[in-house]
Structures are given as C-alpha cells and as structure tokens.
Amino acid sequence: GIQVEQSPPDLILQEGANSTLRCNFSDSVNNLQWFHQNPWGQLINLFYIPSGTKQNGRLSATTVATERYSLLYISSSQTTDSGVYFCAVLSSNTGKLIFGQGTTLQVKP
Amino acid sequence: EAEVAQSPRYKITEKSQAVAFWCDPISGHATLYWYRQILGQGPELLVQFQDESVVDDSQLPKDRFSAERLKGVDSTLKIQPAELGDSAMYLCASSFAAYSPLHFGNGTRLTVT
Image 1 (cartoon, each protein chain N blue to C red):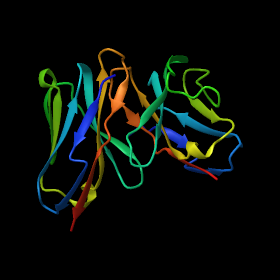
Image 2 (cartoon, rainbow over the protein chains, first blue to last red):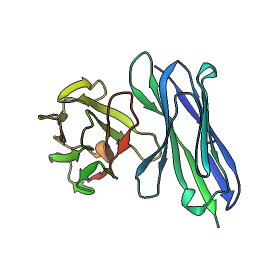
Image 3 (tube, each protein chain N blue to C red):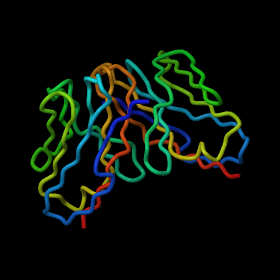
C-alpha cells in the first residue's frame, strides 16, 4: 500500500521562529489533508490541499502531487502551535485515507 | 460551527468486558469513519461508512469489534470482549463525501485494565 513519511519526527522551536514540515508519499493520491492534534487529542483539519498552495493566517501549505510531497509552513510560531501535525493522503488505488506518523512540535516561550 | 459529537470522552473497563462508543456526525455528512490511534502513532482506519453501508472494514478485528450506522446518521462501535491491547484513542470523523475534508470528534480514550 501507499507509504506516507513525515519529517522531522520531532521539532523544538523558540516562540517566533518559522518552520517547515514535510510529507512524502509513495503513490498517486486524490487528495491530501493536514491536521493538528492538540495536547488534549483533538484533531483539527488545517488544510485540504490536493495540489497547489493555500494560506490561512500564519500557516500555509503546498502540495506538489507530481513529485509526491507536501509542505506545511508555520511562521512566527506560538506556544499554541504545539502538538502533533499529521498529513493524510487519499490513495488513488485503494480510496483509503492513510495517515503519516506525525511531526511533534514543541514551541517554547 | 457544527461538530462531530462523541461519547463517552473517557472509558475504563476490565478485560473481557463489553464496551461501546457513540458518534453523531455533522449533519448532512454521508461519510463516517472510525479510527483507532495508539499513543505516538497516526490514526488507523477501522471502518468507513457511506450512509448506512460499510465501504471498508478491512482493518476491523471482526472477531471482537462491530460497527453499525443503522439509519445512516449516528454510529456505534462495540468491542466484546475487550483486551488489554485495545487501550487507545477511538476517533470518529465525518465528511460530506468520501473525497471531502475530514472533521474529527474529540475521541474516546479507552483504558482496558
């Protein structure tokens, strides 16, 4: 089946710093979504981004489907950005939404 | 903003007991998912419904797990009997259609003792 790899696995930032999270996938996909899981376990949908670039405040995402990767940019990070960031891809072959293992982000004040 | 409702929020049960989780998706969402998330890992799909029909339950341990969505609205996931390895977060999600953005509930954290 399709493989989804996220990097880095862990990231520690000082408040105000910028960061880039990466999601690589091994096969063609119909869509890609980025989620943030807060320390209480709630998963929030950040972006639905099968291709191109989207921005929402300090966050933006870019997916290059032909090269099988997506990037999530966080600018001017805040302590509330802490948590785990997951990308999930909808496999074109199986129709299943497959999650990566996540990037754990800690933003220090 | 509409939310996916799940209950209970936490559940502690002894092994060999039965346990059930409930999910009410966002109104109008035809697709409903149950995911299991083990600490430190990404969510893993257990079962996917389109309206009242199961479209994927290939990862559901059918000897002990069952799921239903009788009227195509709310859904119940049951485990009987529970095993120690079932301790995890059980997440329900819904989407307008299978290719639409996913929205998750708060999850049920299950501890089996």
